[in-house]
View 1 (cartoon, rainbow, N blue to C red):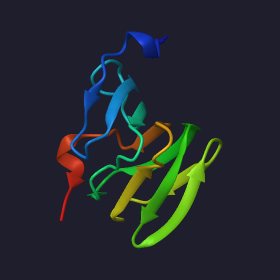
View 2 (cartoon, rainbow, N blue to C red):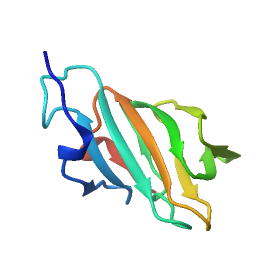
View 3 (cartoon, helix red, strand yellow):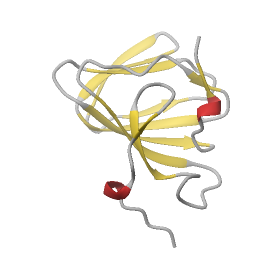
Length: 119
């Protein structure tokens, strides 16, 4: 059995500019097909627009609100929203000016810097 406490995971900055804590991924568990992380963006900040060749992503908003853009389509997002980001699709998430944005990010296959591409 593998159990990881989020508070014990060291935060780091991903290639897209968000700060994440890997909850379960290749660095801390015998994960084969997915990864789970908590991501945070300070008020008014955004990830760098990017895409993943292999990974499909799911975001689940835990705190704050913002704007999600996928392939030019934009939508406001907030607490309780789940977002599907298909592999190969350009995307960016932006926190509103008035609050930090905190969300879970699940990637299948697991997240890797090498699978993150920029224009």
